[in-house]
Length: 259
Image (cartoon, rainbow, N blue to C red; front, side):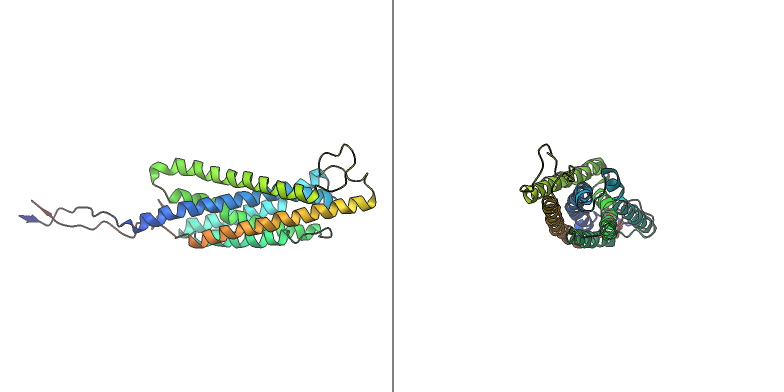
C-alpha cells in the first residue's frame, strides 16, 4: 500500500553548501591582505611622519587617528546594513577598492607631503579595513557548519596575524634596503632616531631615503591589495545563518513512502 501522508526530507542539493565552502578560503585571503595593510600602515606611517614630517613620537601615534576613525565608522555602517538586510557581499568589494586606493595614495607620499594629505590617505585605508576586516570574519564563520565555528574563528585570527607578520617582514626588508646607505652619527642605531645632529645635506639625504622606502612599502601594499579585490569579487552571497527571513533557498520537499 502506498501512503501519501508520510513526508521524508529530501537531501539538500549541494550547490548552497558548495557556495558556503568556497567563501572560506576567499575570506582567508581578505583577512591576510587586510592584516598586511593594517600592521604595515600602523608601523611605518608613524616612522615616516617622524622623519619626513617632523612629528614627535607621541604625536605620530595620534596622527593615526584618521585611519582608526575610518575603520570604526565603516565597520559600524557595514554591520548595521548587514543586520538589517542580510546582504554583505558588497562590503568586501568596497573595502578592497578603498584599500587599493588608499595604499596607492600613500605610495605617492614624498618629503613635501602635508599632514592633511597623509591623514586623508590614512582615512581611506581605514575605511577599507573597516569594510573588510569584520565582514571577512562573518563570511568565514558563515561558510562552515555550526560545529566548526570555533575553528573558523581561530583560523580568521591566524590568517590576520599571519598577514601582519608577513607584511612586516616584507616591508622591513624594503625599508632596510632603501635606507641602508643613509648617513648616521655614531650611536644612532635606529633609523627613527634623532637626526638633528646630522649635517643639512646628510639630513636631507636621510629624509629622502625614508620617503623612498615609504613609497616602496605602500606600492608593494597596493599590489598585495589587488589580491583582496580579486578575492572579494569571487565571493558568493549565501544567506546568513540565523538571520530572520534567510531560510534556505532549497526547502525540504515531501516525497512518498511505501509500506
